[in-house]
Structure formats: C-alpha cells, structure tokens
Length: 369
Image 1: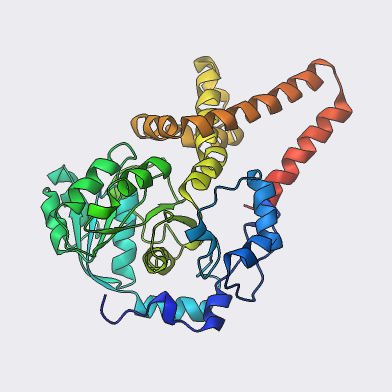
Image 2: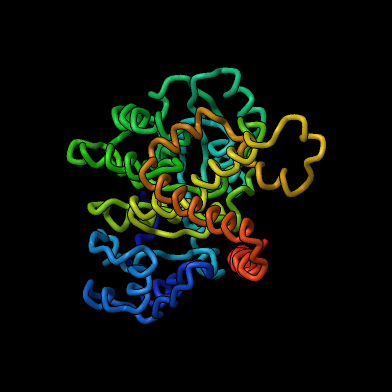
C-alpha cells in the first residue's frame, strides 16, 4: 500500500531489535542480535539447535522461514520505539472482517480504538448479529454478501476452522489483486495448504495467523478492543510466502498489541495441540467425570480447571478433528503422566508423589499468572 515502509527498507539495527527468543518455558537460548544473512549461518545458530531439540530433530523447516531477515520469529512489541513507529505507520483505509463474533469483533474494536482503519466492514450471515456488532462499536458498516470485501485493503477471516477455507475462496474471488488477506483460525496446516494449492491463480496475498487470545464467551457482545494486548499471535507463512506479506500481517497484530511469533503452520499445530487443544479435551473430561450430585461442592479449583470446557462444542469439534494427529500425541503424553500419578498413589509412595507434583508445579510456575 502507498506510504507503507516495507521490511526490506528498514535499517539493520531495527531488524536486530526485533529479534527475540522463544518464551521462557521453552528454555531456548536467545537469538543473536547480530544479523545472519545466510541460511547456513542461521542453521548453525545455537537457537536453531535448541529448536530442533525442542521440536525433535526434523529437517523440514521451510527455507523461506529460516532465511527470513528476522529469523523464525520476531517480537515487535517489546521494543517501544519500534512499536510506536509502527503503529503510526500501519493503516488500512478499508478493512473487512468476515465473521464478527468475539474474535472478529475484538479485531474491529481494536482497529477503531487505535485508528488503524477508516472503514471497517463486517461480513456475516446474521443481520441481527451484524447489527449487534455495529451497535457494540466493532464495525462501521455491515453486509451479508461477501462481495462487500471487494472494497477492502485488508481482509481478516475470523470464522470457525471448518469454514475458513471456503470463505477464503469466496473472498479471493471478489477482492482486488494484491489485497492482503489473513485469518484467525486455531489450526493452520489445512487452512494454509488449502490456499497454497491454488496460489498461482490467487488474487490476494494470504498469510495465516492465530491470535492466542480466545475465550469461552461468544458473539460481538463479548468483543474486547484490548483482547490482544500482551497476548501471543502466531503468524504462519508458507514456504512461498513473500517476506513483506508476512511482515505486514505481523505488523497488523503488533499494532493491536500482540507479541508476534512466526513459525511454519505444522509447528503451530504441533505446539497448540499441547497448549490449547489437548487441554480443552482434558477440561471436558474433568467436567464430564464429575457426578452431577457433587456440583454443589465445586469451588475455584474445579471451576478454573473446567472453564474452557464451556466453549462452543461445534467450534471445538472442528478444531480437534482438524488437528487430530497432534492432539492424539498430546493426549497420549497426558495419559502417561496420569498413569505415573496413579501408580505412585496406589503404591502409597509419598516421596515420588511429591516429586511428580513438584515437577508439575515448577512447570506451571514458569508460565506465570
């Protein structure tokens, strides 16, 4: 877009400042602040070795992501000077949000609050829901016909993962060539692959993304313009994604307050299976296993553990089935831990039980509140 500074034109010092390490719980060394210009140099970096140890030694990292000027990930929020410069530069005259529920509505509210868009068009199936979104300040105008996105400079598809590929096709059929498109789906492999299969004939520039800022609440009434502040958003470029497109989507989420990480779609799905998808199944199992007659006696522990089980079953069924292989692996790891606990409890082995509980406590404490 006119007037926007591209990644390639930024000074090296700014690019260096945006490099950051993985979160503390991953126990990764920080990336060097010294820019690495070749894939071989990046591949020799100790941070990459730690990544391979963390994910398993795999050779399938997309080279386009490995050779990105910022490496595999970047954090554009932790450097205030960059964040301030970026939020004044980032602006899309017309943004279309397809699916104005809690996430889509929060995106709209955040864009409006930060004056990052002139018009915000909400697209959905329900006129009543769109009217509620407009009343809540999530959008400036509403449409039930996806053709309304033709006017947009940026399109965000914030719908359930089962419907996103079809919606992306519908969006791509009507947008102007070169329009930036992203999504907010909780899984990424199938969504990105669906787009890439027809990349050569696509009109839009698509980069997948996932703001890890969900809630069990639904609809535009639950939208929060500060939802993404301090939260992680993962941007998942494909192998063929131009760096500038990935940067621009990263800048969108950074401008909304997110800490942005870039990684391949398959690694996103692998990580989220352990941190989001399997925990939802576990919460559902705890809720289902609690006898109805005992509900009167539930307190904070039970409520905290099962809160996410209150999420939309239809939405979550699609997420879990779309990432079934990774979720199965994560659940089997969980089953191993449950079996360890049962074994030491049945053996009356207090020392080992304390050791297992202490290890779990350390893992939880490392995440923070």
